[in-house]
Image (tube, rainbow, N blue to C red; front, side, top):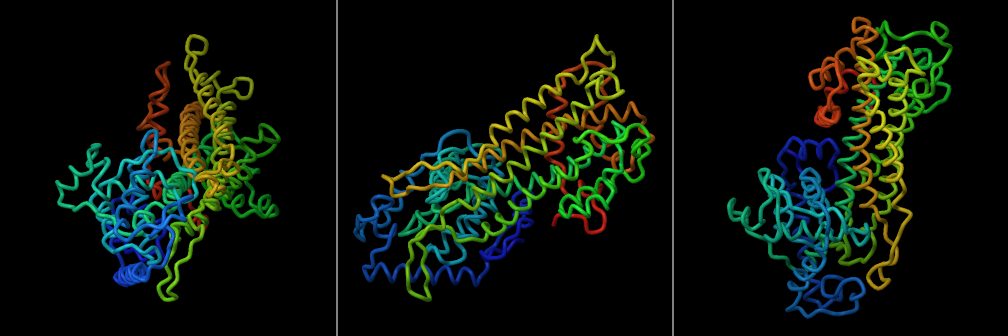
Length: 509
């Protein structure tokens, strides 16, 4: 059971709730603070205090004062008018993450909502009700307004949800399981949608999946080193110690540990003096990729425990402050930075694929074909990998350097952080497929070299992957193989991946 306090949610807990369906509850102390904060809002409304979004219009309409009798309608109109998301919906995983993160932000007791609203979010999580939320339409400032409006619609019994694998009208699902649709009160609509939870949810999913994929890329690269009889001197700890980058040191140590008992690797001078960069510089490149991933992790860990709506109500000080905590710039930068690590993981993997299939660069059968000439083997797999890498280069363009003013120039600088996060996740999917192609090719190469000489760790990885994709003994539709291996990499448990990788304290907790 994960207990939300608003201040101590971890990425591990997010993973347990989102992927393992662990149940969630609210801290009693936090609920009490939420109620006290709501009482403050009621008191300030009774005093006729003018407060943005509580008894005024929104954006450019912030100077329009709303009558008390219309305050509930103000919130309802806000959600209806702002539910302008377009495109394909986010996955259920991301929708579920958004629910959890929005609850964690609101439970801190600065947003002026009733406890019932936070409870409704948690009821959805625990019941597996996931709002259908279009992916496109957020500028990443003033919060993820459009995506979060679609989330709010579901809490109100409107829109659609995913439930038990089906896309259904929300009211039908809520009626079936006896959940009462929420009627929004003053401030609550604004509190729901003024936040960064769409970009942050996508960012969290991207980080957790990329952490696993980087470990899988290290295992795959190690197998490629065996398939190409790579030189182990490049992973000598002294070499990396004097460079000083800890992530590089860690990657080199893991690769050396994975391959410590391999009979397929070589030493410098035995076959060649040094390898190409895509082998020799695995620690330097993947180490830098880890740096981008860990930077994103740091910012995400902060953001999942942040209060990001506007205005914020400080009960003890009896004040309401309009500010800009909804601005997504920190997450926008983090997502643009992680994109570099994602792109380069694919880029160097594709170069190793080329070395595995190009007969001018190795002594393996041309294109790893079982019958060169009559059968093309892995020739076009490299084409696909190159295409995915090229697409990543386009998606890697930083979204955070763009800004288009909105709301009649009242909101004149925005982050585009949700675009950055969505592109990062798309790039991750591309990169996983590239690594899948490298793994298919590396398995063919080590079979040619002799499985009996493989390292213990890579042989175990090989045996697991061979259950998914059989040996290439003749040409077939390789698209199916690529997708099957890619899905297998995605569904693998991080703990299983790490069993082949960890040595001492060399992990990225």
